[in-house]
Length: 582
Image (cartoon, rainbow, N blue to C red):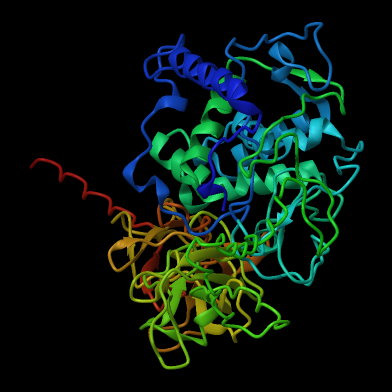
């Protein structure tokens, strides 16, 4: 895994010494403190204690470029300098299409998840570390890389062990997964995190617009606010779970925040060093089954011991060699890889999930809990379980995603994030599966019911009266609540009924008017507003006098009956004339 590797340069002792001096100088120049904007330098902020908690990794902890940013601050304007492969201010240059993709992703996330506060410079920092900005911006006009960018196969040989999850659809490898594209997503992560960033109807990990938008959504999941250092740390570590990786990305983030500029596609600066000791190597197209770039070829086994020389004459004789323990010619068995926790999972079990139901727009009060077990029923910890929302629903997990990956705890249980109901009502399914293991999934049924109210009350107490043929002076307004809380968006119906026992619409008395001015005595399609209020249109009266009933009902069974009175205005009796005096 990348987490297991530091920056190692194999250029001799002198080069190593120079590198050490450079790193020390960089550390001194970017030491913890306050920068020119008065805020603490994020690159040197102490990561939060829980920063290492991760629900997996976007890249499968694949190798990454370890080049540090230059010591000098970047020049925010283009300058003449060395071309590709150069150093200095050219390090701040980002290929035009790649830079455009980062900025478009930031704009999209600002609208979709404004609480995330994703800076495009973070995408640029990750893109620099993962692929050298798509290998210096070698992309077509639509943002697709000229050649696919692939990391080494994750076969457990110096890297994570992730067996094939996409049948080679993204990486061309049907045996093991490989990180794909300029943002280096592994196929199992791209399957749910992929986005269409350039509007061509496809989700292509080798397209910088798609990959940058996907990376933005990935970093903004779990309701993370990236303006908070602790949550920023957790988001970066979830991309590649390595402290060295976190520190490196933070340094590039700060570097790009101080200034950058656009350079033509294909002319970006190429990195030199990778975390797997691949000096000058980079993720490139590979043929499944071959040694990936930057990988060390297996070293030959130990040389056979030389037989001891016979003793010199008079020297005490010879030493008889011990017979071999294995008959000559017997092939050496290949080394066996110990099974990972994932390899031992036989099935998934429900871990006490209660009935999953919520009203539209509300959060589900219960969360899904799934336990991973072996064939013998023993629990399995540290296994990634993927929860996927399926069906015709707009319900999501907290953070707006339809897929969440969670590692099982010491009890073998993975608890999915809370579900947030959308506006679509009806049943849907959440499927739990083991990442990297072909065992049957476990389905959970969930239901979203329509918004409801259990109580209605008038907001005023003024009498509702009207003269025959006139208009009621006051409009009817009611407030809906559910279990004492405001019931917003609740469907309601208002009907002028015949009597308390007969809910059919009356054919005389008060009435509403439709858009054409015609008489109607039933209104449907009404909804309470954000404050739970519902104000009915004006009421009119025909020539019939008496007491009439207006009945308002809502989804959930709340009912309110209001009295309306139509009566002729009272006329005052003339006072008797004064009698003449006697």
